Length: 458
Image (cartoon, one colour):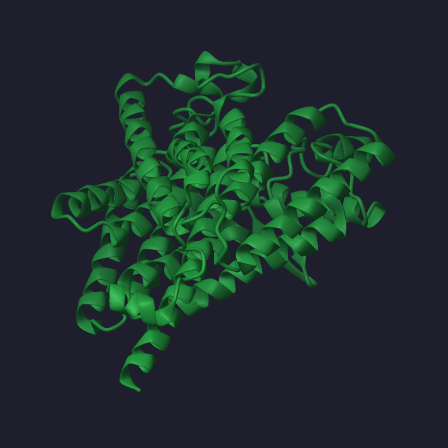
């Protein structure tokens, strides 16, 4: 942008120069950016990077980031994503406080409450920081660094057969069933891989140098390979869907290349799955004729395996719990105890964790939090729909991430035993928020340049 154009258009909202008195807040913002870079790394490692007791490094960093965002320089660009995040945080915290006062804490309340507070703090901080485009770039670079380290540990686990997760309490670890790395459960690692695919895709679209492009591409290519070693059926099929949909949406003007890439992706998936022990293709064939369980869906009996049956019964249990306490819910971490105390665990074959993020929010926090949470996601989905059609490939890729990331949540959030406890859930929500904010922050610049061009031509 030339000086002449700036003179014609005036200062762009949120881009004004700092005065000397703002140097301190600028320093706080720079420190905040360091934490933004580190946040995805700390979230991936969770309790393996310790802090003070249950306040491990990610949670402490999220709280510190919020303090820095409040004290430091803030963006002056109007942001619907920021406003909806503030509303989400206020409603969620208020309902949680009221629920704890009305019902009392459950045995697992304090652990999930700490996760909830730190996650909400991270979202609030990311909504307040200035220059969301720069923050997004730092966030994605940090995600790449964390992904590379986690992937190296995954390869080491494949070679040695020893899970790093087993170094902590055995009760939190599932051994002998796919890679767990630092996630205690192969499904948790599979979910992290899905989140990472979208983050790496967004970074690949943003980087400019050939070396960075190649590095991001190799990281993207490793996601489906590592996914097969988790033995997560949902993860494998969802990763394949992510790849195909990303290609279809991103290469929208190159029909022949797009078609060829989709064919190659499908063939590669079939070949890889054919070599995986207990692969989903064979399991699906066996499952249709020998499922062993059935569920009633709208009057139709469907044959299912035990995993699907349990998840379905947990959905019904969650809806029943919601019907008992629809306004404030059962409180943080109370789902498991409520299932047992209401005698619902006999229907779920003894499994009592929610296994569904939306049902978890609805049953534990009630209709108000659930409605605001869905609205928050819907608001960013609208941004994604607009971004996806942008001629700028970087912006379009961000829209694709928002579309795929949000549209897939009803499936992806069934892979966790609990959605709200893992820190990776919150950094993924943070990724969606930063992409939406970066799009909103770009709009005033475009409007200002457009009005400047009109003024210059008059």
